[in-house]
Image (cartoon, rainbow, N blue to C red):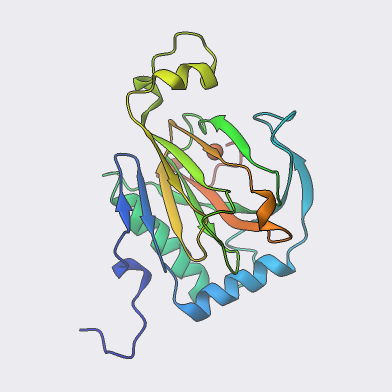
Length: 225
Ligand SMILES: [Fe+2]
């Protein structure tokens, strides 16, 4: 039984939403653990990145490549994120693949997004934990998901933007609310909407990585996006 003054464990957090191919969990980490991760993100060293999806129009994001085994966060706080990802993944996938050790912190400023894509067949799922201190519904930056398999989208033109107009489901938009975790199965079309000008100097901050089949969880050959 959980004592009243005890913060709920990540495993017990109830999802805000469960789709066919995604899970959203709000307030996924206890406050102190979230603060520790947010501080680690602020300390990290970032480098600029042109989008590999649409380098012309996505704008420049910044990333910091690290790993759960290397990041300067307590073992308990690392375990809290990993167990939250595992618990959310288990809701979507009977085989519960393993969280890769490597992950990236990402920063998107105003005008920056990531166009429609899927993460490729080698990734069982992707996870994203939002680390901004605050966000607003009018600041954009939503993760938009077409909640069906890429195989269910008629590939008529071999042009994702055009073919998605014939998707059999409407898209779901998930705002980058602080301390929100999203786990999304692979082979799902998604994009990040551009951060709106109204966000000013507020940066969309996230931690994201992949979960893969257990046997390849430590396989360095799996390419990052
Ligand atoms: Fe992606």
